[in-house]
Amino acid sequence: MAVAVGIHDIALATGHYAMDLAELAVRHGVAADKYYIGLGQHRQTVPAADEDIVTMAAAAAQQIVAEHGANDIRTVLLATETGVDQSKAAAVYVQELLGLPSCTRAVELKQACYGGTSALQLAAGLVHRDPGHRVLVLASDIAKYDVDSAGEATQGAAAVAMLVSADPAVAVLEPGSGLYTADVQDFWRPNYRTTPVVDGKLSVSVYLEAVEQAWKDYEAHGGRSLGEFAAFCYHQPFTKMAYKAHSRLLEINGVAPDRLRLDADLAHFTVYNRMIGNSYTASLFVGLLSLLDHAEDLSGRSVALLSYGSGCVAEFFGMSVVPGYRERLRTAANQAAIARREPVGYERYRQLREAELPEDGSSFTLESRGAGPFRLHAVREHSRIYQARRLIRV
Ligand code: HMG
Image (cartoon, rainbow, N blue to C red; front, side, top):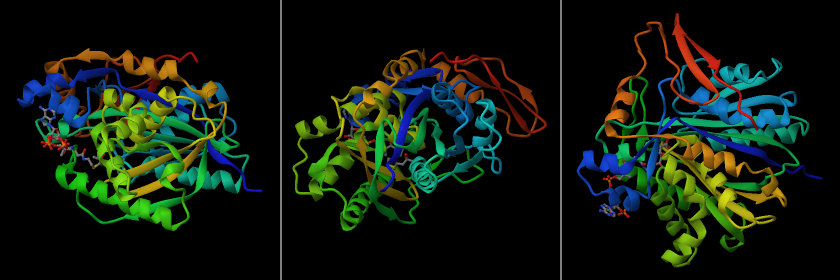
């Protein structure tokens, strides 16, 4: 009999500060509603200087390890496109910070925002091969664009940790996927840049084409029909993009994408992303968490997921929600992580942004700034030194 494999537990972390997009609208000389309504974004997470993708991933993962223990986790897959090293996997730092056993496989994965889904699918393969094996999947990113660019309003930062196992308690990955890859220059970040090169309008149209092609491939491989899905999750660079993507999916299935239908299908899953902003690899799973935390009981129902990563790779797949999943959710912790961010105005945001770490190889020590459980303490002789600030109570 086939083993059911999927998400056994899922947890969220985000950064220390948050800026309301009305602040950015003043600077950009546009109405705040362009961002609130036009992009569907309200706030964006701004990380503290001593926070990065390692500290956020460890903060999300620690909640899972505290509950389930570390011993049966034999693989850590960390997906990011804002990594801190070209060779060493960020997963190795997380393995050490969490005190995972040394008999662990720790790897970093990349394909823009699609990386988190690639890690999830690879994890599922490992568990199918050995159902006693549990895999910690981490998706962690800081989305940052050029100052005064159109993309600046879509910035954000977050990490999602998922424990992938046999007989999961939250959601089972359904068989079959719709896949799409095309070599497109819509968004990319060469090694010599700290911000991406973006063709924003092209990126929107390529994303929509990817939705259509991935869905067609899903159908061609015997996937469910549209009407069998109780809910939908899309990669959310900004929440309005999910509305555009879902409209395209409905249209190609002959359903009119009227506002009532769109809101009914998407309102629950956009709640967290609207407040966090783009979190690249984590964004789809922040949306999944938002859906699980806010929707009526989805026990036994199927949820559709569309992952998109610029460049581009997309995948359409389904998950079946496990009855009783609500007991596993961390709704209060997720909401608290978003609510406790310290508000910053535009000037403070620019100070935080401009206090970027030296990139000339010099050593430095950072004052403790954030409030998360882990921090980047220093860089000495090119080595990053992380510290536990405090232990999360779960
Ligand atoms: P823009 O030029 O600032 O915005 O760029 P716009 O002029 O197109 O306006 C946006 C929307 O606001 C429009 O609505 C306007 O009508 C509306 P739409 O036509 O789209 O429905 N609007 C208003 N609404 C209410 N009140 C008002 C008002 N004014 C205007 N007063 C763009 C938008 C997305 C291009 C920009 O934000 C950008 O470049 N973002 C970064 C790239 C991006 O997020 N692309 C999304 C697809 S690619 C992707 O998702 C992958 C990615 O996550 C990276 C990865 O994979 O690693 C980015």
